[in-house]
Length: 421
Image 1 (spheres, rainbow, N blue to C red):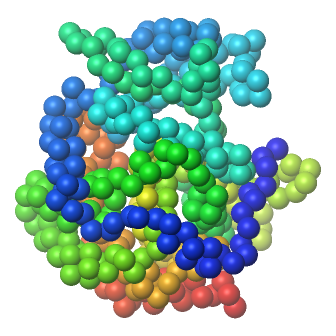
Image 2 (image 1 turned 120 degrees about the horizontal axis):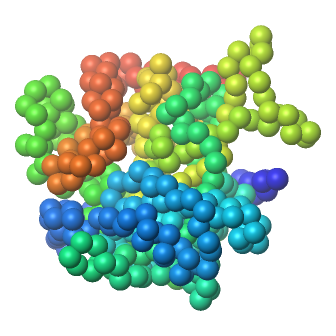
């Protein structure tokens, strides 16, 4: 049975304010920060040098050599710039309380060099799991290490990749489910509880590496992606993205210091959050559709992929969640109100954060379109996975833009406020 999420809600705002004094996060990118993103992006221009391309046989050999496990099945899994394998071992090979199912994660060559960052992300996963959140945990190798930098032959060259073996968590991506209002509320609440726990209690010597200046998936760096505008096809979408970036530079960038900072997951998207039916009874009965509730209720069963974890603005976590939940929703604009209500039941937004929410969601859609478009040019063979969100996201960007801030906010906040009545 999963442990209860143990996050104290007392004196939350006072605690947050005290923690803020201890962080030296700089919201505005200095020239050095700008260079980081330019170098990082330019290095991706030769993706074959960075992205791992292990064969299944190499994955099996690595599992048996590093972890001493006999593999019974190996299946490649989709990934953006890393490589994942679903590993099955025989029942007799189980490790402690873990099941026979694992994920072998092979990091890209660039990120593999930042060992502190990978360890910080891994330690955060372990911390959250201990707190009762459904996050994967690493399996120690034979030598006891939770990650290993391995030199791997691929084609005519050898490259170094960080290797981890993580527990496999079952569940269904929320993109494949029809979500009720209660489920959306529950998701917003759980995501806020996760951030609250990370902010209040997570400590490790490597957390300083999460201050990732110039990180392209940090919304604070949206303006640094402006150089990729020309890679979008000419038309209405490019014009909207261009105007969103301009509004970001005028309204968000000068006021970043007004937003609370925190360690955030940074990528609670439609395939990183898995769901399972809600267990409503102590006896373990799973909720089924009924006349009163024709659709089943779901709860988060897995929070995956901590590769975008960083220290950033807390409100970005909510923004990313709203944007991702809009993608496959039959009521994309209404989604935001239920997620906001759940999030604010744990972490109430400040006036500045609420006022920026609409523009920031537009920023996230624009960011996704720009990075996906640029990444496909560099790695066309992975287009299907890279463009999962972008293919649908541009329609929602148009819908929000045409509806306007006032109309969308009225829908969002009326729904959110209804939970308090």
